[in-house]
Amino acid sequence: MGWEVFPLAIRRILNGSHAILRSHARPVRKINDVIISLLDDMAETMYENNGVGLAAPQIGIAKRLIVVDPGEKRLIKLINPRLLEWEGEAVDVEGCLSIPGIYGEVPRATRVLVEALDPSGKELRLEAEGFLARILQHEIDHLDGILFLDRAIRLVDPEEKGKEGS
Ligand code: ZN
Image 1: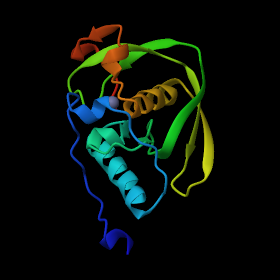
Image 2: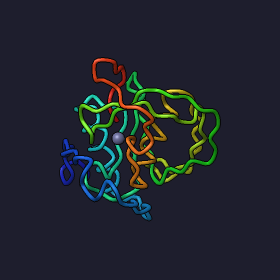
Image 3: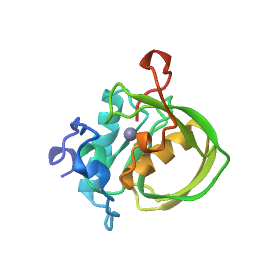
Image 4: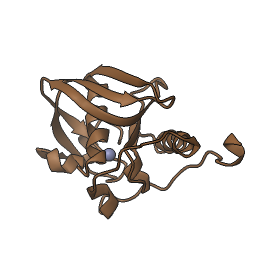
């Protein structure tokens, strides 16, 4: 079956005021074709919108799925991601595809260890620093109904911003 049943699709990104972006997403219990296809659509939607990350609730699906790509087409698809460890703190500018045109300075851990399943169902641990660590924290926040504005310590003029949305 595969792609004939689930063609790649760009999904609509919900605005930050949507209730699903404020709810706790449910863990994925079974990785099936629907989940695999959803992850593909999320990646497609992220690239289409020049984002560096996307969480399933942003396209209206309350499941614990994220995709991230810090650049250079290094696409990472994570199922049920969980922060195991975090350390350090740095403040940098963030945006969000669900909150277009608004940017803010957000403190985040500089290094994280994330546990998740990959699309084949294999358990993995991902150690990340800097920008990738920041994106992972931003996307995992989405799964718990947290938006970057909740953590922002200062809003930034769009002219000043340098980062893509996620
Ligand atoms: Zn976001």
